[in-house]
Image (cartoon, rainbow, N blue to C red; front, side):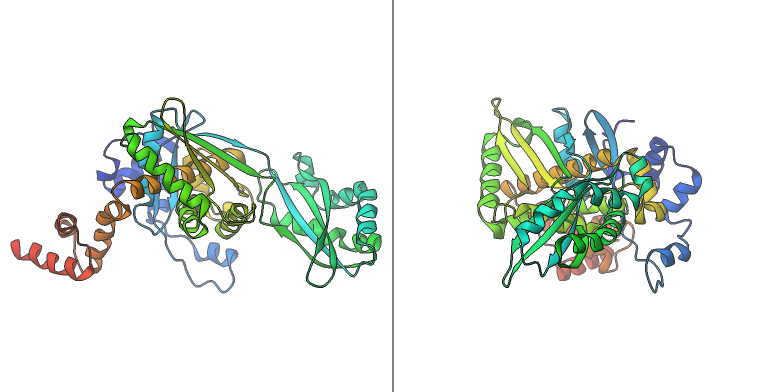
Length: 421
């Protein structure tokens, strides 16, 4: 089924669910779970977190128009922020015209760090660790034979001597292929297992043994082309380039620029039960790798005068383990996307991030961000003011016409709508 569905937003929530459910071949039980007719059991929450008392629901929407490496995919996005899903879907529609999004993934290697202090000869210790590399890797892999049987496991190590405020320390990086898992539990277990041997080799004391969320060996790259004519012509293209150059040069702008990227990325990460904080930490650290915080995307113009956008960032997600397996809605999100591997999931997430960034810089470079937000924000305020059913649409329409979406204005407009009746 094509993900290009004109007027999808005009359908009722029930109609949208039925269309997506049919495309994803969801059972009636799964449909009931998605729309809340069958509530999640408290036993699920109690397994996931400590002191569980209930759930906080986040709206789950569908990103449309996403063609990724030639395949159409519906993209579940969990977010409380208005305009995110609409903006990403519109950007994906424009990219669809030129072939959609093209994504690549560098692999699934994660780092575990083992900090060693109190070493009198840190460079000598580095040499001794490398001399014992194979034995250390074997000990790591003995801790996760299942991962090894799937082709993963500890593949290599690096040794770094770090200058600190007091003394040099040695930090060992375990390079572990975690395959379809995010890998934190496996890596942390391996790091703890080899710590005593590293102490024996170096004569130092191991302090920290933990995964790094700067997954620079697990990068995802996305690319898309946007036709100049379809986005407003050369003047808009040039404004988008200027907006990108601003973000690339100024960390104050880059912070908001990258936040817009993460609006889309975190929504898909959350929908699939992955760790939003780990992804965000890795993304922002990667944006600072040059010594200055910069844009995660790049924008340029090709020989045909069309806009080309690329995104590169670390993305440590999984489709097995953790909440991805224990939360039934996360499982349904993967089913709706028809994701079969962590590489496919990473590609979808990166495509959404690039789409979200295009939508933001396109709006900022033309009519301004508020026009796109206005109608959606007005709906929230209308509901807060007590509007029901048909009153919501009429109140929003008046507010958008007036270009005034303050709460007091919405309240007054709602009164007018009710008086007209």
